[in-house]
Every structure is written in C-alpha cells, then in structure tokens.
Image (cartoon, rainbow, N blue to C red):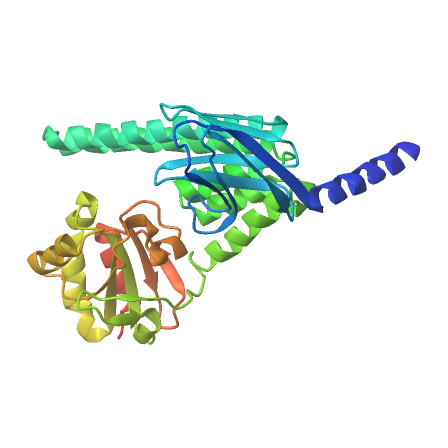
Length: 366
C-alpha cells in the first residue's frame, strides 16, 4: 500500500513539473554572425519569435525569459541559420563557429533531441538515395520489370523503416522529447496522419499531458481535418490573373485538389491522366483545383498553358511555404486530395488507374 501511495505522489509531482512555467537561459558565441540579431522562435523560422538578442561585437549573446511549459524552440539568424533547442529550464550554451558549425550544450533532454535528429538525418539520406536510385533507373531507360522490382524493394525498405521507428517510439514512450520525434518523422517526413496518430497512442499518459504532448495533439487534431473523413476549412489564394479564389466557391462539386509544380516530373507525368478524367467528368460536375508550389510566376503559367491545364489554378509562389500546402501538411509532391460535394475528404494520393476508377465510382449513375 505504501508503495502505491508513493507512486501516486511521484506521478502528481511529475505532472506538476511538466505543466509549470519554465525559465529559459540561453547564451553563447555566434562567431559567424557578429552584430546580427538572433531570434528564439517556436517555428522553424522567425515568423513567431518569442525573444531576440543582438550579437555583440565580441560575438557573445544572451537571452532569458519564461515559457508556459517545456518544449522545442529554434534559434534563427540570417536566412539559413537555424538550430533547434529543447527548453526545459536547463541553461543552454549555443555556439556558432566561423564556418557555420553549431554546437548546443544543455541537459539530458537536449541530448535526446540530438539523438532524434541523428536518426532523422539517416532517414533523409535513405530517402535521397532512393530518389537517386529511381531517377537513375529511369534515365538509363531501364525496363519496366527492373523499375517495378526496384520500386518494390524501396517499398519494402520503407516498411521495415516504419516498423523500426514505431519500435523506437515505443521504447521512449515515457520521454517528453518523443513527441518532437513523432512530429519530425511521421508528420514532417511522411505526412501521414494515421501513422502519426498510431505513434501518439503509444505515448504514456503523462507525456500526453506535458507541453510537448499537447502541442503534438493539437497538430494531429488540425491534421485530422485534412485527412480522409475530415471537412477541409476554407482557404483563399491567387489565380494566375491575380484574382482571389476560395475553396468553398467549389462547394456542391466533387473536387480534386492537386498539389504540383512546373518543376515536378512525377506531377507532370500524371497530367495526361488528369486531362482525360477532367474532359470526361467536368461536364458532370467534377472540378480540379491545382495548387502550385512554384516560386516564380512565369514557369507556373507557362506549364499551365503548354500542358493545356484548363481547370482552376492558385498559388502564393512560396513553394512549400505556401499557406495551403502548410494547411494540408504537404512536404512532398505530388499530393492529391478528393473532396465530396460537402467538402469532406474521401480519398487521397491516388494516381493513374486508381484515380480514374475512383472518379468513375463517384460519378456512377450521375
């Protein structure tokens, strides 16, 4: 009985510690950027700074303040310098060398975050290697059998990687930094709501109730609106002729939202299939809304005209920083979402015959 009471007391103390305000204290030397301003931001850029400090002439800086709870933040300066730090009340020493090398010295949670980042680096290297392997096979004119075999091998590797990562999350389910890894691997890398939700369910109750767990849950709730079964909130963006167009203007129609770009080979390879589908079903009520992740206007409009893409188009010309892409958690293209007449997502990421069959099914009898 005493042991059970002690356990309950420790859980209560732990819960209070997780939810209380923390003091951050960050200092160091920013040698590569003297007299620049360093921003402490909750996002991976300077869009939502919570603090800033001017680097002095001797390259030192210091910032101190409070946060409502422990969690990950980012030190940003200039256009390209960014490093994530885990703020939990432990003093942080951040050093930026003349050659741009960054070193962070902090407590246990920062070390765990660094381990997560190293695992993600391996993931990105494997992803890049897979892309190069497939691109090389296509450039060399490899047979369909060879490409199919390569694709199957890459899919098997991806499946094994997913299993390994889920086991990794399970082994660290009581660690307050693990929600950051779930965000990085399942949301930012895979863009998968279902897999991210499965990983979230592995977390212990106390981690779910800490600041990092609540941040992850809020992101999952938002992501759920942009997954199968979710009702997509309205959005507005600019058409090629500079007019504003909103999604809800297409309510009452079956809508394909196609995230693409003029520089995206796989996106353009799907164009003939999309054109056939649009020509057949647009008279029956199908609408397509192309959301371009181009950065320059001319290539975007040139691709629309040369490829004969006669459906609706919008873009903010901000690539993956496009607000709609961020809203849908799009971090790679092509991505595609099919909405019914009420705006509910009923399918996503279909291509080729799978897409044609789905649209045929939806318009059957209409």
